Amino acid sequence: MRPTDNIKNKIKNMDFKASNELKQKMLEDVLNEQNKKQHSTQTPQSVWRIIMKSNITKLATAAIVIAAILVGINRFGGSIDGSSVAWAQVVEQINNYTKYKYRERVVRENGPKRPIMDVYHLNLSQRRQEVENGDIHIIDMRGTDAITVELKPDQMKATVTKFIGTGPRKDPHIIEMVKRFEQKTTERLGTKEVDGKILQGFRHAPNARNDFTVWVDPKTKLPVEIELVHTKAGQTIFMDEFEFDFDLGPEAFGTEIPAGYEIETLIQDYRPVKPKEITAEDLAEELKHTAYTIDRLSWITNQTIMRVASPLGTRTISYITGIQTDDGNTILIVQGDYYDMERMVWIPNQQLVLETPNGAKLYTHPNGSIYAQRFLDSFAKAKPDLFNAADISDQRITRMIVMPNGTVLGLVANKQISNDRIQALVESLVEINTK
Image (cartoon, rainbow, N blue to C red; front, side, top):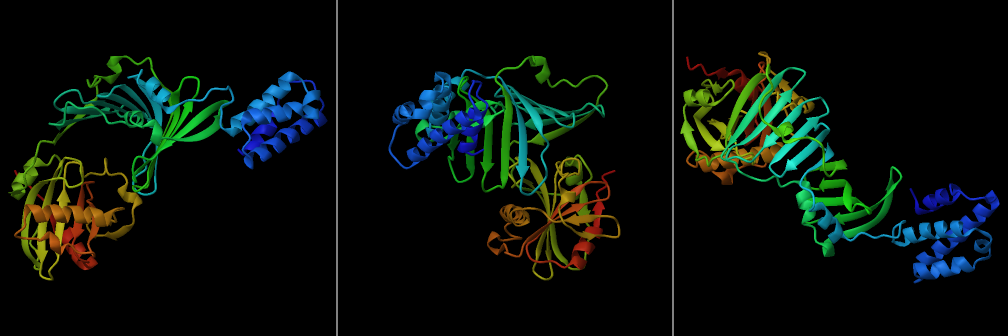
């Protein structure tokens, strides 16, 4: 809403006995003085004196004059109730709370859509997330091994994931980031009205990747809305509906599974992983879902399987089957416990580039070049005698392979590879049977 529109509405809706002509004349008087203010060095106090001396103001009641002037002062930089919040006051007030709740919405330019959820922080190590589809997530990072519980009440299913070697730790959450803003580097944005409440805005861009906007209630000096733009990642996080305390007790943050639920347990080992060459049998033993190996193809000249720390920053384990071909290409097949369609639901939203006769589907990756580079670089460090990182090509590609049973594999080619060879490679994938 434009400032002039706000002033018009304020005067129009004032509760006083006066004709419409009087209201219109007063509106013109106030707006004329505000327009002069924008092109002069007058202070709000001097504008007050000018309007008080105007003929039309003398005809209005004192209540009308005060209300109209307060609207003008608000647009000159103050607040409608005469208060102005300093950023240091906001930080001081936030520090009084360790429990808080908010609604989180994430908008992405590319990649999987994130559901809206209500997030409850009991403290910096315990969190509860209630997803719009009814799912409930519990995160507990107090122990040596962090634990997450994903409950699907409508299906009576639960997934428990243990992250070995990650804790104890605290959640570096957005509110904690906001607390670190320095007043001298935090920009004032003026005011805006939301649901009849006047909010004061602040902006802080600590680096080229993050841009924060925080809207504060001047009465409570607490955030009402927070927007975080990840400028380079093409993602914006919106937080609102804050409650700086809530009624949920500690039992709502427990990781015990309700009776009657079907439970799946996953282990993700975050302890340091050294690259190691393994066999197909080792791969099948370590993966919790179906493991695949590549049958010998005439154009494959070398093949090896490596266990490495995931180069994607997830601190999980990746299994890379690396092959070299007779045309000088290096191709990687990537597998991991987190590679399945229950977790990688974003894949069908990508471009389908190939479907094989056996039912496997190949899709593009939204960050395929980066994904390929990281895995090629990781493979080069793990197996330098087979591949040199200096040979990573600008032609590299990534394809996500969805097998008929829902298992997902990543395919990376250092150079362009024909669809005929991709199809032959996918059709050569066979399940590893250790029995």
